[in-house]
Image (cartoon, rainbow, N blue to C red):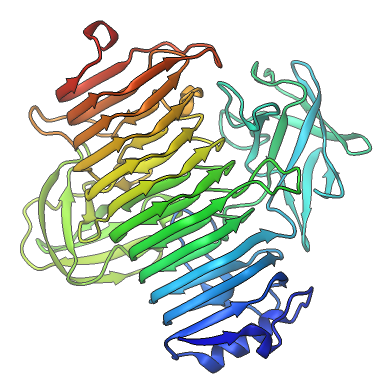
Length: 565
């Protein structure tokens, strides 16, 4: 393999606004060459968006599908290594660090990623009463101003309002507060607070509620508030239509989207990729969304020895997309709508893929066939043609691409202190989760599937959860009914058919403050054996039984009958 030391192209550590111009010239010169290893020597490299590649990208489960600027665009590359010898990549403003599209055999290793100005800010609660809160915000670290009673944060080159609202973090545990929830202000939905902001002194902002509401009982002086003012727009790694991708020995401190988002990609290995808090900065958050997210993956997903903490959504989410049948034009042809806003523009497959037609009420397959044509009409609609006549094409039913089903192995990882849940596992392949540690405020394992709201598919066939450690999970009821939760959103269940098939939970350790272990519905078989259960007093108990089951056809367990429903 040919080694290319990037310093030969003038790409060296330092704060050079033209650095990406040099990167573009290097990649343009070497485009099409296979068997290259790019080597970045130790140091901090500053990347500005001024001369970056710009493309319109439809990134699933992200906001703003508009032209995005890309630092390293490896579209079409094969057999390439990008190796950092302790290199730190520091990105400025809205920029996507890595885009791998139509790539084969790519390895990226040995780099650290951070952003000069984070997409979120934070403050400490220094005063609190029923309708009044005072936040101490470091104006130097998180520049802000108050305009007309609203709080705005200055990012590099622009002001953004406090958009999503806030998440309160327990200062002692550096994790979401017990039984907490998202807090938002002046937004057009019922859970939002009406509020007026004003400057109350140096680095102090007062928030006064204007309606018949009070701050949550869970709020405490000394806790920190994560202040969300940036949409989830730019993941660190956006991987599409690729195969044989390895990310290894990478540290990510922040990004304004997910750490890794993959669409229609086969065989991904993520090893020792750590999404963690910066050791020198007193910053309580990491990524603004999920850790690792896979949409219509294939082959095998292998996640090994990773640490994911304090990100603002789930560590791992694996799913497909349900497209809703909008119009039936013939027995072979339908127009399909992408309903969920964060899925807009994502093409559901290619000709030759195997599609199923699914009743959205039961979420059970009605029929299936290969498709011969799929046409992208616009970001909302796609035209799909089946290879044979279909008998169950019905407006409101959904279609699912079943050609993209990954096997999954997640081992030796730590998932902790993030917003919401742990692993969202909706893959019909063989799924094994072993020797991991979970400290999540919501369900550590969520097996869902939804054809009426998020439109994330699909039905699972065989999942094994073994040898893991679950520490005080599901202490926020809104994010989980138990450490392990199975909750597809089917509206109607058929007598002898179930959406999910087999879940085995064996040889794990559960440290719990109450009785709850598994909450499951619409599952064919549950095996719960040889698990060790330790009672603790870290949190107040939440009401529930060890196994709360509804519509589970077969149960094999050593839990006493009086401990389960």
